[in-house]
Amino acid sequence: MSTAILTGQPVPGSSIEADLRSLGFDVRSAADTAEAETLLAAVPGEERVALVDARFVGHVHALRLGLTDPRFPLAAIPGAVTAQPAGRQALTRAMARENSAGGGTTLVDSLADRILTALDTDGTEVHRPELGSLVAVVPADPQVRNEARQALTTVDDEAVRLKSAVKSRDGFFTTYCISPYSRYIARWCARRGLTPNQVTTASLITALIAAACAATGTRGGFVAAGVLLIASFVLDCVDGQIARYSLQYSTLGAWLDATFDRAKEYAYYAGLALGAARGGDDVWALALGAMVLQTCRHVVDFSFNEANHDATANTSPTAALSGKLDSVGWTVWVRRMIVLPIGERWAMIAVLTAATTPRITFYALLIGCAFAATYTTAGRVLRSLTRKARRTDRAAQALADLADSGPLAQGLAEALKKPARGLPGFTAPVVAFLGGLAVVLTAALTGFGGPWAIVAAVVYALTSGLAVARPLKGALDWLVPPLFRAAEYGTVLVLAAKADVNGALPAAFGLVAAVAYHHYDTVYRIRGNAGASPAWLVRSIGGHEGRTLLVTVLAALLTASQFTVALTALAVAVALVVLLESIRFWVAAHKGGAPAVHDEGEPA
Image (tube, rainbow, N blue to C red; front, side, top):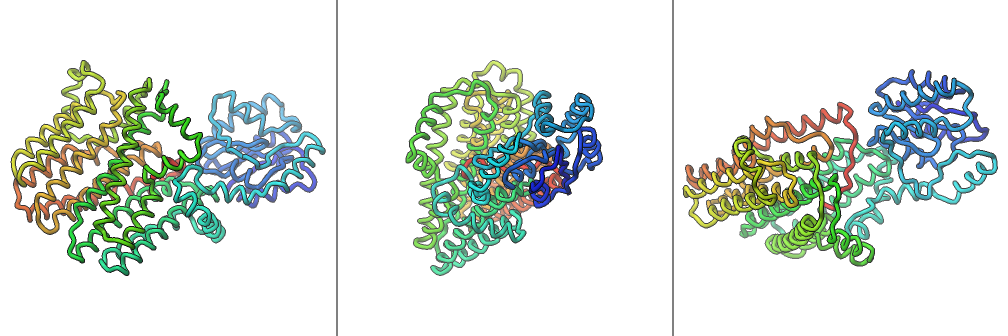
């Protein structure tokens, strides 16, 4: 239960008390600052508390935005300030100071606004939501109050609330083909008590049914799969819109939304590959290639953003040009569409599944994603080379965590730390690229099971250690994690294809999916300010260089059929370890009251 403390002189006919109760607050009144401090102290520390001026005039949604958003320890709008448990100490300290300064006299001006000024003076971060056309004021006299009440009638706060439920930045397909009606579905769900997590789960189930339909290999199954994939995407939009409509943000919800998106798409790839196999067409290599390419694209996004989100002196002519293009309406949509965000990508997959074959679908997906990856990566490289940015220790640590270096690379990094100090700033991405290229090309150009792949994997481990021997603060060091991902996933793909036996590529698909889940999980932990995956987990699954070396050794020591069994066993082992730890962590974080997150990010 949340508590709202009304301060100041009550106003006859005011709806503020009823509005607060409609938002779930237990309302109490204080005649002066001393009584407000006493009431504040009586509220249990694990509950949200708000101070609201009794003269407040405004929309209910303005109060909702200012007082119920779970993402911020402290938040305020004119005439109201709120604190969650994490911000309670700062609020109590500011209240004590105001009580001491005011001597407990009857409240004349707004105590909430004075408290907010005190918090600002302390340098405490307080979230102030953008209210737009919503009214939120504390009138100084009856005339201003009447004007404010008239302004309330000219703005439909429900319409504002519904509009704000839609993500402000999204792809063309989502903006114009989904959001115009999905927002009403979101409102319908919210009014019936459905939570974002329940809708997220429904979206996952729908996508899995779509994958099962695709796996039938029949034209009817493909058509049904395409329709269900679009339905799953609609639900995927609805869950976020419910969260924004009702401010139902949570740490667990953000994780479920992000991981289920990846699970849905990659399960659908597997369903298409199974359906193609029923028709006599083996497209597992294409399915695995699409997953590798899409995952590497995401890692590029994550690494670039982590490297630059808190960089100082972060300017670039390329970024300035991008900003100018954003001022021209049609270029915004073209640039958003050519990167093939999730809406456009899933629409393309759904239509091609229903109308063509899995092979054509994968060809189109690979070509589109390859073009998008080239476009976005080239732009980010240009920005990095032309900007003068000083990256922080936090950014360097985030990139090191994303690198997923195991015991081999970490040990080599420690040994090479001193020699690496004198190397040029571009060393890390160059050696990561050369080491990864060596192991993938060697696996591709030599026979299956040859010793040269092991030699190349050892070289890859050495270059991986050298790449992370210094803090990753160079202009292009954000490329190191995606290069590691491409090397590891590419090696598994090539060796499975070279095995040329039934089941090898599906086993490789399972292994890459399990490892990719671990990498995504690391990203979401960092984005949620929860730290990276624990060191024991990274060590237990070997790190990227350890797994790459292990796979090449298995290929050299085992027959092709035995290699397939080994890949399957490795995939199951990795999946069990990372899934159990991931579920344990996120459920514990949710139950432990971790700060709610809601990462709008880029269209995935």
